Image (cartoon, rainbow, N blue to C red):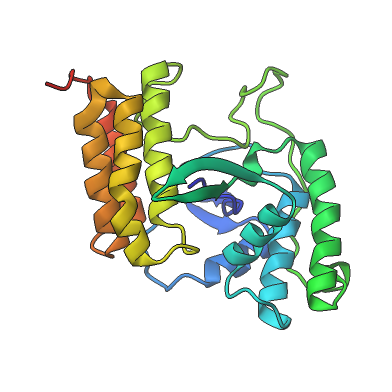
Length: 255
């Protein structure tokens, strides 16, 4: 699943990185000191409104009575309420719906969702989110794009490639990346029990093997990795790195 939450905004200062705004500083403090992080420099940040959205969700979870435990739970509830879902088809007799990434929305679409989401949060919590927003850490001002080109994707943008190891523009690579994403969406779907996910991984494998008959070995590797992820034997980041590296290798026709 794509990571919706905006990346930390950092400023380069004499050989080190420092938080560029209060929102990033607060999020950075949530990590244990000494934690090693992998950083990919991207100069085009998400919009201030998007960062404000996540800051408000954090305050709602922290300060209000809600049916959700985490910011991710709240965001997924908003997506379900307003139909921002992908149809994953029937798996084990159950129709599986996957939350879309908010990064897929254009700025006008996100502006509309933001207004609807604020009204929804007020109905659920009885608290005006805009009042809470005055207490949220400053998400900083928007910055101009690093590139002056108006072409989509120029200068980075807010929708990085799903897997940096896969050749961009390669339809087969795109298909393998989508396969990885769907396995992870199913493996990490907390609305389904662990046992249900384990029992129905074979259904996901069958679906993708039918769709990618020349990559049966790769689909099997996705299934095996997803099973380890569900069992907690491997972390998501490690699993994604492994499958992305595997997907980047030249494909071999299944025997």
